Image (cartoon, rainbow, N blue to C red; front, side, top):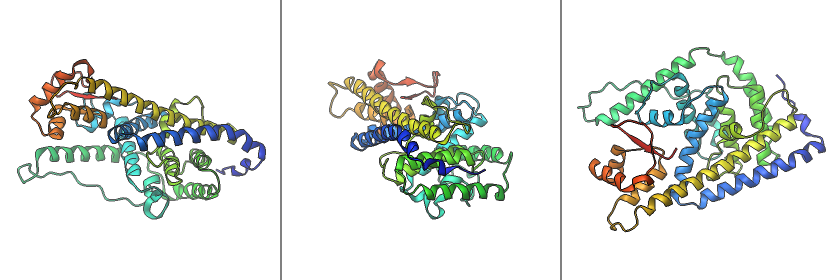
Length: 352
């Protein structure tokens, strides 16, 4: 399949993209600056939730539904329902996004960093399931986490083994996409990211990994300095925007829709930051009048900074007893976040 990059040349095309380009650029720069200036606990909480929401949205775009609560609880090994194949895929997308966000800006486009985007390069060998006895010096909690990760890797391996694509069939589209990426070097950052994403969706260089095109565009925005404080959640923006992407549409119309998705992503990130700030303010009001040694404000920041909190995790994070955490939860009263498991035991709370 050939990508029609030359249709961007006529001046009329540029005039048609000027409005969406400016709106997307303004929204993205504004929310990135807000995250850079926000209190660390708020910024970290917004970024953590963006990873989860974007992974969920990426599956939704592929026609699979994963409840956000299921994804959060699965990560904490607190599933209330039997994990599905779609949930395992969401976990893989989430891992890809976190690896890319943790990497240095621009690394994904140089050297061995291409594996972060395509998944086609050689990767590290899978770890085998840890069968060690918990009494051999390792805490049981860590052994349980190792086993959970091993189980998730096996599920994903079974999925990937379903229809492996020949290497030769994947190399040509990837090479074509990289040529398009080289041609965008002189374009504005937002437009270059939109072209890169559109070309990925058209050429499909990594079959069954459509989310990587969205991550590639987000990584390009980071590398070009448009999103230094976060990795844009473009899957979420594409799902929530009014634009409908289709190969049948003219290239300028497709690009305008993708720029609208970038703008929507930025606005949703700003809205989530506002939501976390409001939730934190409401919970901190319940801390008024407490002793200076009270750990309640720290529990509030734990709720804001992480998507899910259990009694055990809060006890470890605050260095208090589980009974003290239960007492603090009672003190928060109706201000505390929603309980996610709907169980009487092994409960979890989170702002999701």
